[in-house]
Image 1 (cartoon, rainbow, N blue to C red):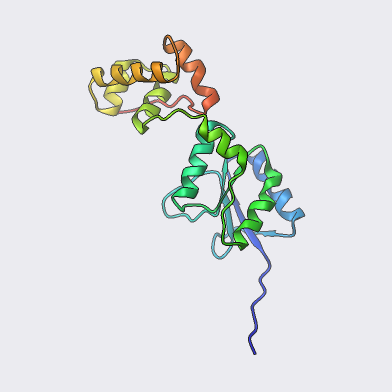
Image 2: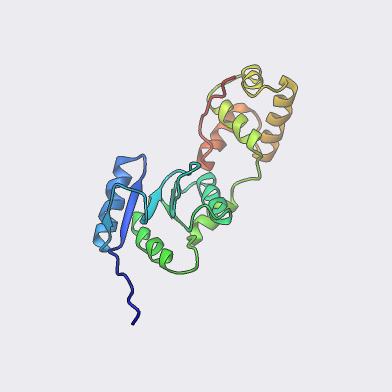
Length: 185
């Protein structure tokens, strides 16, 4: 006779925002899941990916960059589901998806990710540094590249984001999810 072990569904929530954490905890408890402090043999919900930590459901900001990050994590098999931070109720669908063989990416995440222009990792770093008010010289020193390289990347960013100057570039970055981030070298 075969018997299957019945486990109470458990989830570990690891997010930086206390408000988001409370919203997710409420959704989890209303769905009949229990929360736990340990990360072993439970569903893990987090708003960040780090090497070594297994994450089942990634909570992303509903910006093009946040959504692209979520999609890339699913494609790279780092996570099995994505939830937007402003839609904590969708966590129940994501938890249900973990029991199935498929993954869950909301249509909104796909749509938002598609609006993010193709930018290299270096271009994203430079965009963040520009938003933080750093000069080309400081950016070059921080990234250990020539100032000419930074100027070329800034020109590409201006063209890609249809901006006429650094100020208009910065105004286009925040809605995409590209926030100020200083580079240090």
